[in-house]
Image 1 (cartoon, rainbow, N blue to C red):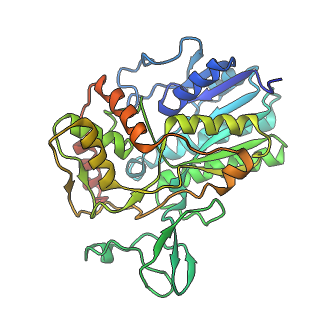
Image 2 (cartoon, rainbow, N blue to C red; image 1 turned 60 degrees about the vertical axis):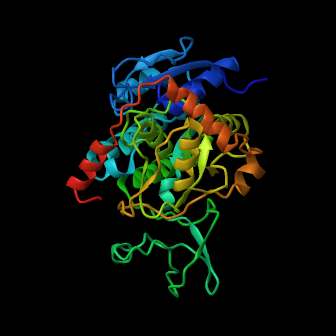
Length: 374
């Protein structure tokens, strides 16, 4: 017998949320969506064509108490996925990010603490960005958690990460949930704050809560016109416009790219299983891939003649390596990713073929440069 019947997904018209909505409806759940249709994600200000017509839609904002009260009516499980997203952008739209991510979550939790609802579980979208740099192993000092590389080092084109104790070059290892979180942007701080608030209030009121620390999620429905989107979508947009994907540093920095279908499966397991209650989980692949390889893979799959432009430039706040340790989520939720990268990027490209790819990366770079963030 299913534990929950009526599900609320905030941000349910967006990239991750809409895929989750589809899966929930396919499984027979009644789904409600709360979304403000932010024009950065939805340029027309209207529901996207892919939005599931079987879902109940409320156009509202998580920073509005009345919208929360309306959306929570008769809901027994919540996926709080609405968020202001973007590391660089968060450093000059500080009030917006704190308001949406922190205040929006605080309003939810204040309602749960002071109002009788039917909610029996909540899952919040957390982020790998809260870790800052990933974890590393030093031959002399063992496991270390370095801070961001100093600007003086990057100015010398020294891209490596050095041990904070002995200054030796260190090797990346999977980052575990218990490793320290050294958030280095307003976005990362707000996501860490969201996670901690949800788990703390959940424990205090015995309301099962789970935080999912998403790594680099990619796949169809990822906006190709949002200049602050994931690097895979940004590269795809440029290649479709016959422009070279621009790569920072030497292109050998790595990320953990996880496909949207795997992310949705992890979210469902977090909802259905009690073994993950009051826990945080990494949601990635545990397999790092270089940014240069991502660009080359997309170019190959698109059969394009462009070549990656390795700029050797530095983008402030960038980490060198960070990829997920999946031991905990495999053990407690039984989840493992199943989509291979080439298959996943092929799906993204097929989606991209049907979309108008507006290359707005240059705009984003100008905004960062204007504020000394690049």
